[in-house]
Length: 353
Image 1 (cartoon, rainbow, N blue to C red):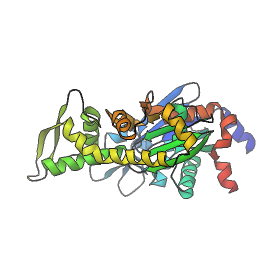
Image 2: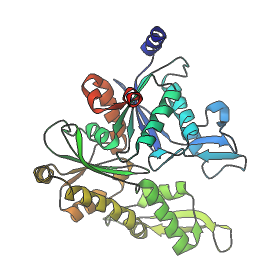
Image 3: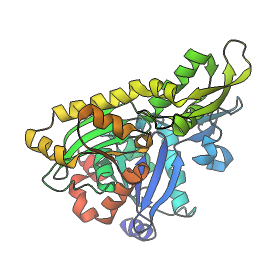
Image 4: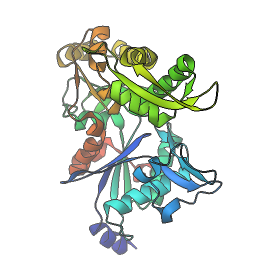
């Protein structure tokens, strides 16, 4: 059995996975990001049968969100950064593993998966089980803020403070790191999805217009902002009129969308304040000089760095390509597994426990 595992492992490509609520990214050593697809699976309603022969996953499935007939359901199997549907997550991971290996079936890669810092032991075990059942030979877990910090090129191994704010789809991870450890971290379930929901609620309240999550996300990306823009924007939005039940369109401005986004933005800023308040003085002094780094898709919201800098009076920068920081960090772990394995949880550790 061990010889078989070794042989299969030789022909498998090790993978670093940012298993996100909104998107799943896969990083492969020496190749970088090889997959970036929505964490969505389309199934036949009432079953866990994935459509299109198991291929209705990712981009294909996201196109079906909110547009499926009664017998089809598009599911996001992760909620707030953790697994909400165990079996569907397993099938999604199996699809992504096979896709990276060009549809090969006989593969058993080692996988590093980034997880929110605030999840429970049961939720960690669920991630490991899903990956193993999907075909992983060995599973390592790393906290998202640590992976994001490494992916953003921060000196997390040094005896100085590095502060990261990773804003994903389901969670925002705020952490101060030093010597490969999390000195203090806050994990809040306010992130990109809550921003989309705030836009949906704003349009319902102020325009009696019902739009879907994908439309709200497009509005956020096209005109959303956290700080006033040099030139305010507007966009035409189509949805269903709640009064008469018919389709209708209207125009919304970046000013009103900014007001709608203010509550989730201030929740993120409060998490940053809490983390800073719990940081030891010597490390707090480092942050004054080093500043705060923003990562994750939410870091792309216009003016978010500006409003955070105003609120906490510290320098703030957005990581280069913030959307892929966590995935690139998992790839760094794979490149130097011998060095990093001591700071990772693994499936063997879980079994020993």
